[in-house]
Length: 259
Image 1 (cartoon, rainbow, N blue to C red):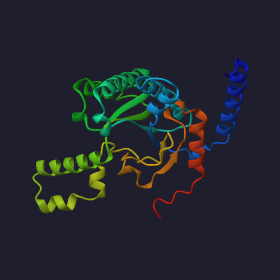
Image 2 (image 1 turned 120 degrees about the vertical axis):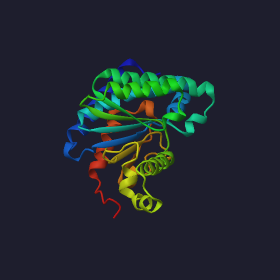
Image 3 (image 1 turned 60 degrees about the vertical axis):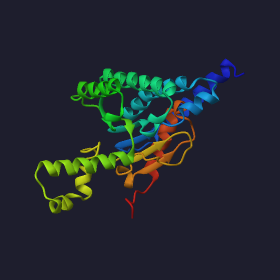
């Protein structure tokens, strides 16, 4: 069992190392929009002898830390994938507590006073109570001049593209456009204007925790030129030094935007 002195020494070394990494960080090279796939809550819980609900609670608590680190490093937009459309198929005994945790987390983000909350996802797929919380958080923070926090709840990348095309078609129909005129409108720029993140910059960097090296449908359209950083640690164990390493790795890359 680790002694108290060993814990103190380890924490001291960690803080010194994190400070060193942060001191070498070029803020001019910091990504303006970071997407985060918050992965590994359940595996962290199993490894630590805890329940799935406790794992989700620990993951939710980590979000405020992450946003604090982002504020310190001049990040402007953060997209948090909190619940996918696939997650909605989980058993009710797991999904219902998870939705409650998400609702409390979103309320907390809105009450903090530093973040502007914006929902990305399909509201109609979510319970009425969850929809209400997301709408209220967005409305209550609309005037805040802080980090824009996209909470991706009931989100799927394919669903987003389908919704964008549907929105484009409905808009054209309302304006009395013919099929020929509609066909001319279906291009990259017009679809982009109907995404959940319309008006926002695309993510410069996408971080996924837990060691999985795939996007799983996260921001499929917006991530065409994003850089990816895959971190081995589970989301509840994600530390500031892990975040700083991701930024350092990003700054060292030469972005070629697909070329």
